[in-house]
Length: 277
Image (cartoon, rainbow, N blue to C red):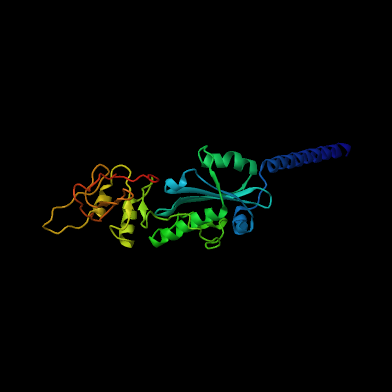
């Protein structure tokens, strides 16, 4: 009888030790897991949080594309932020993402330097960040371009469109026309086709990088009468069909230039560089 009791006691002791080890393991695991609010819930309540700050890269107004970052302070003092790659000259939101439950120190010491490749960004007013993003969305929509697929969720970090008054500090397009500068991964032919459909040849600028894709060249080739030889498409190394804007140096596909007397003609740059005077 006594032996049976001792065996039972040993079993109970081993079971207790196992339970204790499991609890200790769970406690260690929980202590190593960041405590935060559910990301989906954070997005729903994001607009109720105060804006921590807004940033954009240096020289953004000369580059045609702005990397806009807007951060909000969560109730637990962590950071919720949205990043928006904004083509404010033509196609709108090229890319978008967001993150939540980011430790404040990590955000300022690691996230911001990484997003801006180690170059300190410019601090801007939240209103300017909103104007840049929403203004580009609206401008691109007029041209038939939708924002990046991730923007629907990332936009919840922004105040609703129209919340902030437009200051007019940002020019969407260039000199009253869309300016398309291809980016890596773009479907250039699709974008050019959309511009032709919405504004027409002669009403937008195109600044190719390197060789013009053949299918793009075909789209930009104006129709010629049957008895007129085909004109060559403009390429970075030659000035053919189309005109060069005398103020900007931009080539306007499909627009004819007026000839001037030789004495008045001046050599014009073939490729416009954003920000060049």
